[in-house]
Length: 151
Image (cartoon, rainbow, N blue to C red; front, top):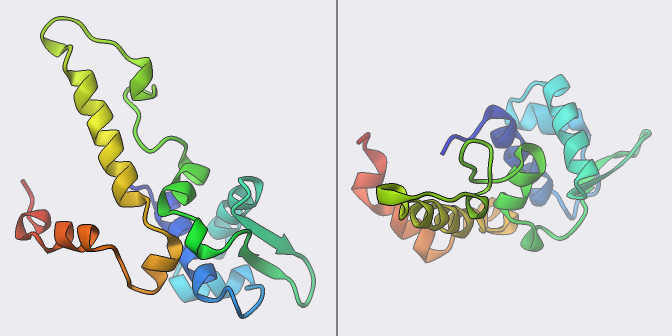
């Protein structure tokens, strides 16, 4: 799985908003500066996140962006889907829409399992990531030395 710069930036911006959710709106410039992201690129991402219902915005001197829902109820997966579309696709199709025959028949089960695994890992909430309180299952996966090596 590849995480694009757009998806990475969207998650980082959402985490910046999650960390400041009690402080009021954040200006795009402050988010961009805080995360080392191009302001112009970030504006497009925040626009998509607004259209997707993940953030709200207000113009003006006291304006800025904020999460549309509590950080506890927004998953990393939702943020990525909002700016990139489906988490797992094969040739641009969702795994349940595929079919295979012969020796490749069980490949569909593999793609479905991959999608389930990605959903599980990326189902972590913004609040959990922002507070560095990842679930034990996620920490255990990352603690495996094999996870850090190139196959």
